[in-house]
Image (cartoon, rainbow, N blue to C red; front, side, top):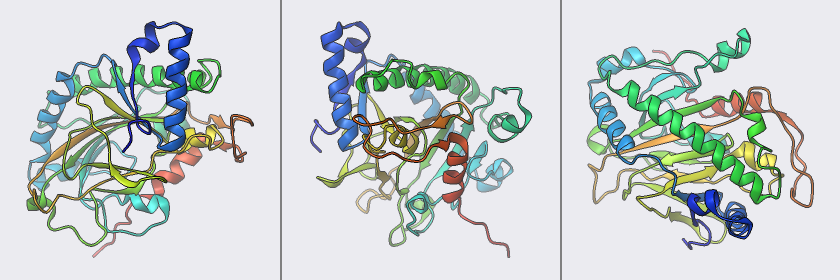
Length: 325
């Protein structure tokens, strides 16, 4: 995939450069989000040892017997363990498929707003696995870094559109977010993939921006663009992968496209490949009214939506119904 479609954006010149340097960066961001919906972000300042330690600890939990993990089982949107068969992300596009070949531990926003109905749905306490107590301080440190970085990215995105830098962050005073630790084991755990089955099926994310710390893998991330179809996502070990979601695309009046992507199944020539991704989904304050930017920035005038009614419908769409018996 051409680097012009998924460029590496160094935050150093963005933070410290003059108006011309910032304008050049904004133009590259605008171009990339129109074509692919993805960026690689370097110079982010996140300690690379932190996600490595999270992976090591999470792996200990994921490799436990299913009976030890089952007490933490939750549905999509919950806080805890999403076991095999819980999600089929392709359903968000209306495409039926077998369930995704992964397990996840999911965290979400847990700082109450004081509004009972909002807190009951979006700001419940997180669950932490008793078997790996060292996970909590690592994840809490990582979450603080992701929140700050996501707001900085939103400021960059606003500037790339020629807007005030707080155009989006004025709606992230008390936002919802999610963090998934996605475990992609090999076929010795998940079995041989069924036809049309992926570690994660083709979809776009639902919120504003997603920040992904991933590992290079043969059964890894692919990105779809109109010009190139499905291609392996560019990888830079010093960079985080950032993509925009459906809410942001809608907010920009479809000037920018939500980054369509999938994660390949375990490869036939490396069936034991095991990967863990740290996926931070950023959103906005509950009940934000998302209105498309007008022309000439925006290109499609979508009807305004309540951000979190929209998000709830999206989460429900990828939940695999559980059958009894």
